[in-house]
Image (cartoon, rainbow, N blue to C red; front, side, top):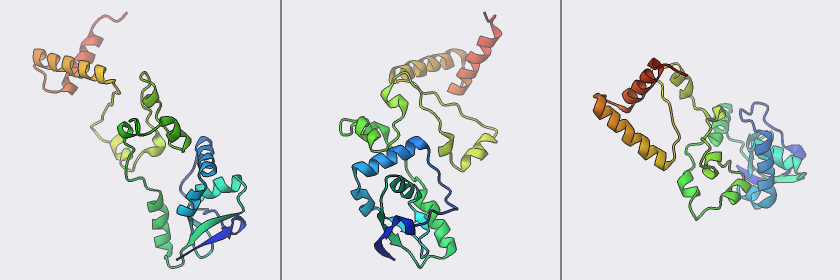
Length: 198
């Protein structure tokens, strides 16, 4: 394994790359590289012995569009085809999530984070917006969840709405002898639909 600079024309995109990038994400990546090109030195593109990209296909796309002539690469010759496939997946797996409470603190400027390529959820800047569920970030368990007998509904509430809702559900549970928040919500829905709707 060695690090060197290669001419862009010598590097080949991986035809079996399982990752894709949306135009707005590519634009952010290009801006990120333009603003901080030293990152390319710190995080070189990984290629095999034939200069096919194993890690960094999106960066290659971005720097090609930016007009770069050469780029730092790490060339790995010793990986088996199975290890190369494993590397491609593991290099792109996100093992953690962003802690939006920390990022929203005084130590981080959301405008900077956005400019650095981080997709800031709309609800972080807008108290009235709900977080969106991005199907592209779904995990392998999603299919089994969709086909399971138990489902989950997630509500996004402000801190004030949350406290008020929990207090009212607790009161309803005590008054009606219900055992859970689920029972309380189902009770409300059932009684709502048994009334004469306008």
